[in-house]
Amino acid sequence: MSHLGLTIGWQLALAVVVPVLLAVIILTAEARGPLAAPIQSSKGIVTPYFNVVAILFSLYAALLASDAWEKDVHARRLVSDEANSAQLIAHTAKAMDVEASVVPKLRAYLESSGSEMDRGTMIAAARARTEQAFAELVTTIVREPRLDPSSRALLVSETRDMMKARDDRAHLADDGTLPLKRLVLVLFGALTQVALMLVHVGGPRRAMRVSVGLFTVAFSVSLAFAAIFDSPFQNFIPHEPRASLGNVLSSLKP
Image 1 (cartoon, one colour):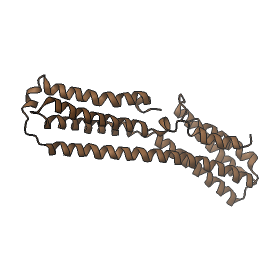
Image 2 (tube, rainbow, N blue to C red):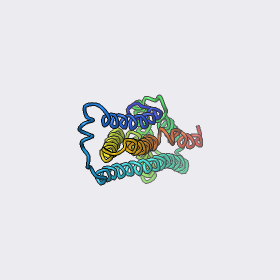
Image 3 (cartoon, rainbow, N blue to C red):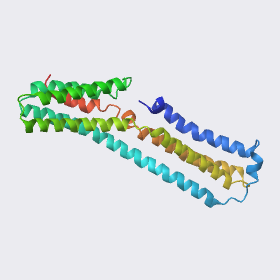
Image 4 (cartoon, rainbow, N blue to C red):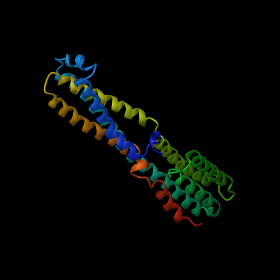
């Protein structure tokens, strides 16, 4: 389930390695090689140049951090909404005396939906099973002869709310923009490293290396934060939605 097929361990490793590697390449290019002479001759670049690039990096990193934090909160709310809707369906079915026909279909849905995020699960097949279980649940409600039209409409509405929460959760877990967002962060980070190097050209190399090194640490922390918080179902709530839906499942009569 990790993006680009990478586990969180590999993502964190890359968050450290990529900024450090970029810093080494930039500092080496300034000290020796075919680019050293042109770089060392570019004296006179003033600090505001660095400030503009650094501000761009800071704003984008802050935007990613805010987005990742909101994503974690949203993921927890969607899991809770799905579980609460399932519980409401069970209570409504019991109150309308159709528990015997509705609850077994609801159990099948919960078992399938709860296992979608499990490691090693074939996601496409698991989601197909969930959608099939949802269709069977709705069909059972629609065909239940003991339900009057208003009661049937209420149960169908509750079922749709449950499925919407599940669909939104799946969409959140499948966020395909993460690699691009991190690539842009790497680009801004690299530009800031270059800017820091350029404003120190002509001065002590030690000051240059310290400045680039300190920023590289902040660069790595930003990438690591994005790797951790941008994938809540893999990192902070890997037990969901199985745990919440499992609690509802255990409360239903077999």
